[in-house]
Length: 251
Image: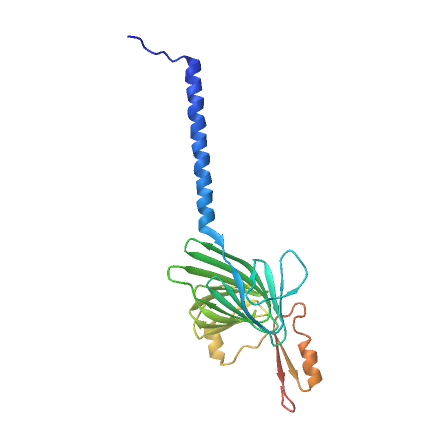
C-alpha cells in the first residue's frame, strides 16, 4: 500500500495557504463589522420646519450668511440666526427647537446609533425652547451648551437663554462652567451665578421668591433709549438683553 509523503516544501505551501485564508477571513469580518456599524450609526436630517421674519443660516465652510428657507435641510455645524421679532422652528430628530428672536444657535451634530439619538447644540446668544419627544424604544440625549453652562436632557421640554433655565416637563441636568451638576424637575428653575459661574439650586431659587435677572438688563424711558438698548443685543461677550419700555415708571 502506497502512502503519500508530504515533503517539507509542500507542508510550507500548505501553511502559507492556510494563513492566507485566515487573513482573508479576518479582513472580510472587519469589513462586515464596519458596514454594520455604518448601518447602525447614521446622521439624521435637521430641517427648518417653519420661519417667521428674518432668519439666516451660516454653513461651516463659509463666513457668509444666507436667508433660511422653510422646509430646508441643513447639515451639522450650521449656525442659525434670528432677527428682531423673528423665530424659527427646527426639527432635529425627535427634538423640536423653537429659536426665539435675536438668537444665534449652532447645531453641532445629530447622530443616531441603534436606539440612541445624540443631539449637540450651542446657544451662543438669545433664547430657545426645546421639546424632546422620542418615539417608543428610542432614547434621546440632548446637550445644549452656552458660554457659561451646559444643560443635558433626556426627554423633556424647557426654556433656556444661556444662563436661566426653566423646565416645563421632565427632569434636566444643569451645570455652570464651575461647580457641580444639579437636577431640575418640572416646574422648577435655575440660573448660573455669573460671579462664581455655578448653577444655583432650584430650591434656593424658589426660596428667594424672585425671578432671577437675566445677565444684562436695560430700562428705556424714551424711544431713543429703547433703540440704543436694542443695539446692545448680540454684542460681543453678551448673552441676552431684556428691554423694559415705559414712560414715567421707575426701573
